[in-house]
Length: 197
Image (tube, rainbow, N blue to C red):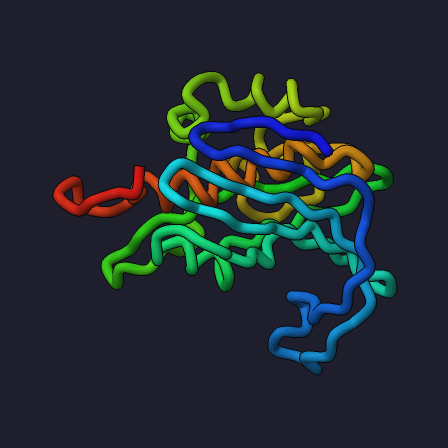
């Protein structure tokens, strides 16, 4: 097991891959059939009571990978949003995963949804240089999505990272920084509203 802390989130990356069956995101509006897949699992926890398990899933018969599928076991009610929002869908390029990073942000309706974010904001959540931290955890490249994934037609200036398929710790760290930390800090909420941190 590999364990590390990013921002205010502790991540325990479990060893090995686990066989599961799950509906891939591409079929949520399609046939909605569960398909065989393998998953890398991580347990997340924070001092505000959060306890969750997050899965990086690769479907056996598809070139589709998704990090999310959070099972929230304990913590403030706002974290339940992780169960149905905030998945990261990296692109598989040879033996690497390239992921565009967006952050959950509260909107006028009070629900957190994915929104564009700058590295400077991710640095705040990381309490330092987020790109350096992601490299420490195994990211092979960080920067702009259009540079890391040249065939991208949109969102080219947004933050992105690249990780080896067999060493995805930095991808789980990015999830903690751009999904958990924004909920914890109430990203997008009026300053008068309370955050979990």
